[in-house]
Length: 344
Image (cartoon, rainbow, N blue to C red; front, side):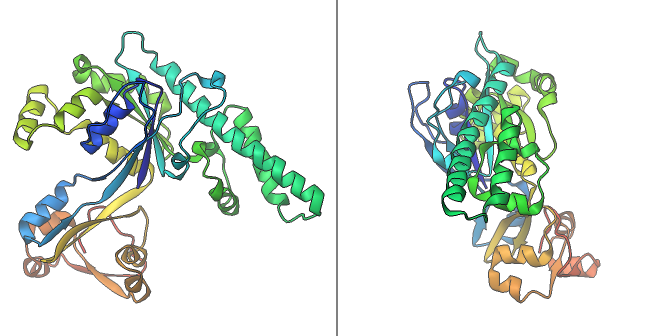
């Protein structure tokens, strides 16, 4: 999974990136550098399975973060944007919003960043409409007629200030647009970056932004980037003590990752044995055969059935012999829908 982090200067996006990655990149509006990190997704289930199995190797799911400059926070008045082209290849985007500074206007900043995404997509749409129209006129080739009509439909949507993710597209239309990698077609996680003195008000603050939540398209997370960045520099014991003092059960960065997974419809299934305990990322609703392909394409092609165990049952009975004796292991075929946290 790839997540692009964007925000206006001094919104705290690089601070959030540091908190997620454990890096110590320079922060501040003077920095126009892009930062990239691949991090392991914390998963208590993997840790507990490893305690039972004592494997030679532990492999967590991974997520790639890209902290990219280029957005101004000026909205429709932004003019020409210098957006990192790699943002177009992210699976989802995180909008980091300043809610910590004395003169912060988070609701306005959200709209301005969305407007800038729309502007960026309008440029792509307009350029491609012009190219395809000229090609059709010069060559008489009408093969791109449907795609041109679809681009004009996208143009009308963007001109109305709407995101392309809100279009109800047929499967063939989605396929035609896939290569354009529009920013406004990507799910958005809006990260409200608060001050330390508001840590205990996270739920109340999140409720103030609930109108932005759209299932499978947009979600909101409240995070104190500065404090989270400090947490990752502490030893595990000191981190737990600090979190306990602040009344924090789960670091906000972990919640950000969970929400990102949910937005993209991702889940993890687990495999465990002496060689390796591992979390595998798949789409929610994937069949057992398709999930097998994540492990290896040969396994997918030759897949007949798999032995599966619910994660909670594995924790309770601890060994496969005890699990089988209790009748908790099942053989499932190609069309079985894999569950989150399932052990195979």
